[in-house]
Image (cartoon, rainbow, N blue to C red; front, top):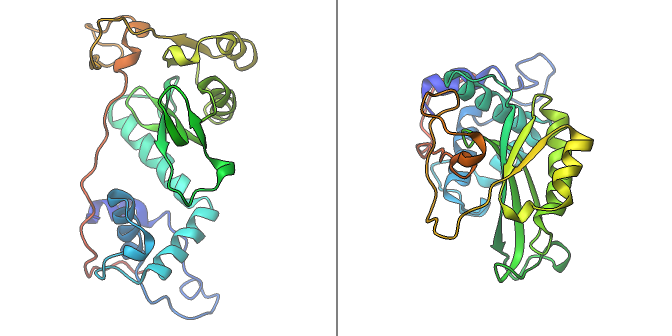
Length: 246
């Protein structure tokens, strides 16, 4: 984590009890090191027990992560980062349009039968993650269900929760898997227009579209398939000594 990144995040982290005058033992590890460790784990997809020795012991990292997650801090950090990116792109912090899609993923043999299923279309036994992103490709909401759950059923759970959180949300683009009564239901109950974008038989891959409002911008419906924008970030560097104060 760079010094500039840490300056943006530091003020959001809870003040340790011993620094706030509430007593207790001083924490043995810097919060900056903990965030670097969590970012490394997410970026590389490793197990907690596989945490490199450059970082604090994995039980301590997990304990910090669990505490911050349960307090809503992880979601708050994500919300603020997404809003900052949207502002930098000249957008409103809260989106008015989004894209919904799903992906089936094979589950390990250790995954309980109650939380897995068979996706007959993709021929995958496992789970399915349902994602809602804005037109920049930034995550708005996610729902993980057994792979046997249809896209329409999952969207019926994902979209109401998203609408409650993002009041400006008025239009969502989706592929043919969401065709059916869902389009009428979202309009009547959520006030959200669900646009089904059908892919032509001769289409290959996806295309990027100009930003909304551009003079070259085609109609929104014809561009929904290209609304996804890959967002990547550099892998966090190994933990290093730094002044953090927490």
